[in-house]
Amino acid sequence: MMFLWFKKTCATNVEIILRIREIKLDIKRFTITNIEEMILGIDYASAGTGIIFSSSSELGQHIEQVIDTGQEFILNNGDDATTLMSSNSVFYISLESNNCVYFYEGCCGFCEYKGWIICNSPEMACHKELVLFVIGDSSVDCRTNNFLGTFARVDRLSYGHDFDIHQPTGRFCNGRIPVDYLVSRLGLPFVPSYLGQAGSTEEMILGVNYASAGAGIIFSSGSELGQHISLAQQIVFIQGQHISLAQQIGDDATSNLISSSVFYISIGSNVYIQYYLLNVSNDQSVYLPWSFNQFLAQTIKQEIKNLYNAKVRKVVVMGLAPIGWAPDYLGIYSSKNGECLVTINDMILEFNFAVRYMVSGLNEVLVDSSIIFCDAFEGSMDIIQNHDRYGFNVTDEACCGLGEYKGWIMCVSPEMACNNASSHIWWDQFHPTSAVNRILADNVWSSLHTPSGTQ
Image 1 (cartoon, helix red, strand yellow):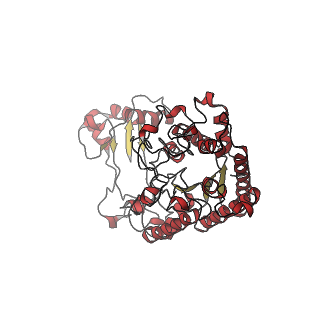
Image 2 (cartoon, one colour):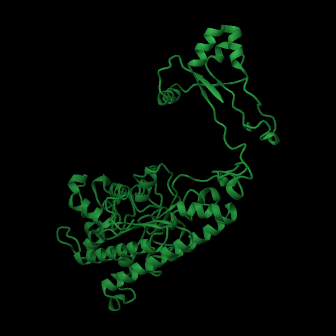
Image 3 (cartoon, one colour):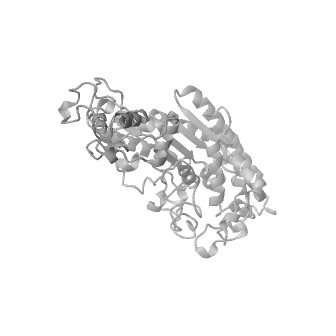
């Protein structure tokens, strides 16, 4: 219990609360004896105190009654002054669960309903903040491939030149990738790479990025670049970490964390770039584009079901961007005046349609799930077609690379980079600049290109 004294009585309850916040009163403990301090307010509260005299006595000594401060004021200031001060004071009483036998689940503690042991470690705390887990390819890789034997790695400048620390971070960009902007919106730290963290409980409960450059929906896509972690392998790693986490904080706490977290999936471009369009396994003679896209959508569907069986309930599935505009293809197919490769973009449109339809169906059959499809194609096309409005001067040529449209090879040295990446849509042969990633992340945040029926 505490009392607060205000000189005027015309304030409403809300105004009183606001005034408390504004002046940030330093409410003294009840042990003070100086009258000048008493008239500024006193805090009588004692942990363990209950409505019943003996409640919580097993915890040790606690204050058993409120000191009659009024008598002190009467002796020192007289009846009238005491009455005036008391009538202008606010008495705030807060007694919670010390008299209760049954408890609802708390935020921090141990064992059933977290009510057996007081919270004394970070692992025992619940997490009300949103936690993000990332699955995908180079569009969201944040250092995973730096630990693998692969050509698909960016541990050198000018990658990261415009990042917060102005150093390469394993991101295939001059700066931030879309998920970086999303966690900043949420007030969260950047999500660490799966291979770049120690696997401790403290790290796992804050989110993990499993994405690997070169990864594809099909296991073998991107293998010619070297090691990578495929979509299926990333799901296996997630399942393994959940088992490890459950061993440390318990099954219920793990299930609560996973079911309330968001799993962000951005993958698929490599299946076309490094597999189907190169006809690596003669798939073009087996699958027409539409059939191939249906196969890919069903593969993603099964992996989302695997996540669902692992207690995942919130999933964001990103559609693919129009890679027919990528500098690599503009150079390979000798595009005239930077015109896009329509046949490639048509395949991407078909893929996005198939995945959108699949997501809509999953929402109907997976109980308590919330799966959202975000159309990166539409957002990217809006940027390309209205580049002046977004502040981009160069739409076809990469900022960093060599050859026609700077799409022949990826950025391998600082000397290859342009002076102002923010004026370019493309950073390298396949990846957009940080400025574009920010816009795409804003679209996800605002659900600008999220079709109805997919959330």
